[in-house]
Length: 252
Length: 155
Image (cartoon, each protein chain N blue to C red):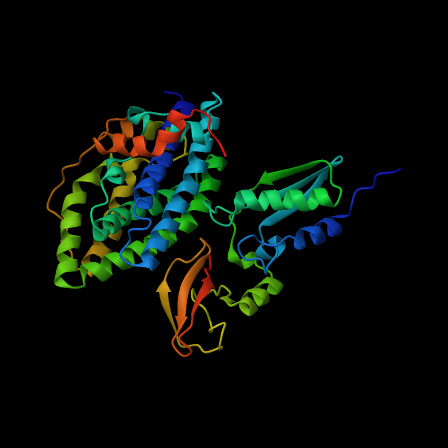
């Protein structure tokens, strides 16, 4: 695997995480429990779609076959997507959506922090831009986790159920493969496994404040990073890609 | 007829007359998103940085810049997206901060929250939401006059 091949894969992973999560979060628009949360979710989705444009735009540039961010987002099928399984999990209730967001935000903030010093300046400058937004996402999702976890009996139980359901999807973040080896050797990106300890420390601290119990399980559902997805991704893409599939090249 | 190129000061003045499409009381220059102006031969190059990655106003801003500069007779123009260094609210001009406050939007503060209510000036404030009507704003409320207001987030 050449360095550019590895970088292309890695950029797809970053951009596919943000585009799939953005789509999931945007499903809340018009359905949130209160107006302020509706706006907050919409803004989070907007930041993520903006980051997607940068990551997939750079992926297309690195690939060198003339594919744009739009081509990559709208014209690849599920098996060519490289996002974590976590971000394609269904929204569930508001608490579960925020738990998924928190687990991802914590990881993304650490990943972007490492990418700030990437030996590839194109990666470093996107990370610098995105990390400011993600710090804000993490502040909000962590506050919400603590508020709802250490809240009423009902909200606590819902947050614990969300954590129990999503926990086994977090292990995939830290599974390294050849892409990670090539890029970490080149100083472009950290090895996936190297983020685990810091993530556990950060997440553990917030979940403790939230009075939630981390499930006693080290099982990891995996496959997303190499294109093996759950049944949910196909439905997301069917919704997201319909227009470009039905009317190729449509623009306005 | 001899075509003379405008001075950089003149170009900056022109750009300072282009309002932000979402907060029209401040200009694009006040907002701090115009990062540089240069000529390559006869071609005017303007570097623009986005406020937030997904800010939906980005394409309108580029269109507004182009429309304004073309109206001033600029024939050759290129707008370049500049990501680095990332935009920060430190780049908001003092003129812009004053205009925001007068308009009813509390300007960003390093402490992370507004210093006073832009309506009545009281400092008994509470946060309603970390996000607001645009990516760059949050919602706050004055506990004295009870008016909700926008706060320009500090990043």
